[in-house]
Length: 341
Image (cartoon, rainbow, N blue to C red; front, side, top):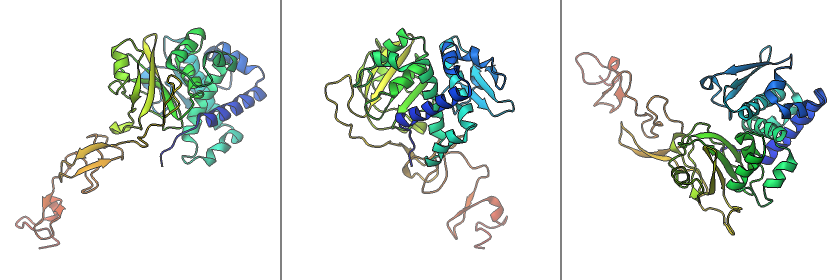
């Protein structure tokens, strides 16, 4: 089963988190909006730790981490952008709130993955809703949905991070899609998804259609593309609009109803496509959605069950049973395995 989170579900969870936070700490939301990281450093029940970028959690949508403790610890990657660090700190605070409240954990029981994706998406929504109030968002994002240029304008007129703006924009997508933030060479700095499987932070998207032209040109490009998931798997085709964002590129992608076009019917490609492989052991041509071997980066062949990695112990083929066995299964003076000799 392919898991995804609807932006509305994450937003509902985030609203419950804000309510619980205000009940426990009246006025906390306003103080966090003024300077999240500085405010959190004053909370005696939490430890806030600055960490290098390479020590931040890789499974999270942001460069940060949460540890139960005791005492509970929020790790925030160092960055020149105070806005980015505030967003990360609020995201990790979201994990703290959800992991320490039975009421907030209750929605996880209804999710196919027991709430893993919902928890992380709700952390993004929680941070974005604190940093970007609704009245400001509604001034810049049209009811038809966000264009890439409108997303950039919202960022320029607010003090929020690019990530917070992407989350708020994804909440306004008119159809399933993504809002992507890409670095100058095309690596994914952040992604906010609605109704489609989330994308991995750090994945390379710089050579896919539309994105490649945006990175090579002025940054404002429209067209269709397929985003890349793990192991080269491509998602369904999406209508795409891009715009520059002060050294980064922001992209809005939807399956249909693109607000930057007069009419956009749903794209016909309804599912991800895997890569083609040729087995190095049995020459079988196959496609696979399975995770690749961590050493050779090739998934196991469905015919022989092997990847491209050479076996640790070379095997021998038996002419009696036509099976391959390890050398220990053969007598020194026989070409047949012990079962056949």
